Length: 249
Image 1 (tube, rainbow, N blue to C red):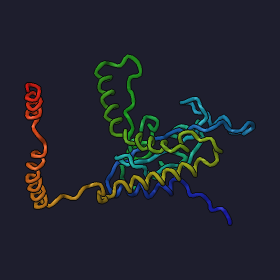
Image 2: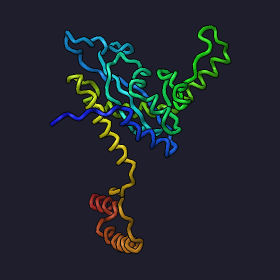
Image 3: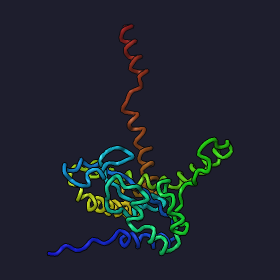
């Protein structure tokens, strides 16, 4: 059997971008790193797996979710030293958004610059105009805008957390060449699970409601049986009184 060529990531994610554009939903994109073991000595690209952010050997993947945090797409893995914006450009995200439907994609500061290249479809936090000696009113405004943007894109962090709940993605101890297939397989299973959870199903734990007539009959029988139970038990006053009279005699 001949190996089939792998489809580019842009072709794989095009259907999800079209879905977001047709439904008018907002997408959220973010990159995440998965820790891997150190590549073998003598490998030419060994140093490229060292992440500049976490200072550890890792691979990077880009995750696309909807506004509810449901995983829609997960890109193939690349070495951890690759920047987020460079990884997005290599995957063809810029061309896909520029030529695709009008859709809003939220991203963090690592993707600043894609907004101008995609016609404003990628929305990132605002740039800082004052790097030093910024006035107080500007610091307050910038912090307010940054928190508002962060609160809108927090759901992508939840989707990434669900991905890393799988033990294979918490820390991969196998070969780095298998990470792309493993990440996309786990993302597919997770997306299917999240879609199944959103589908309405009958609640099997809900107890059926009793007929009021049955409840009335049950209460009537309970009232009739109550005097019988009380008659079998002697009052504690009589038992104590019987003991005192016996002692007096």
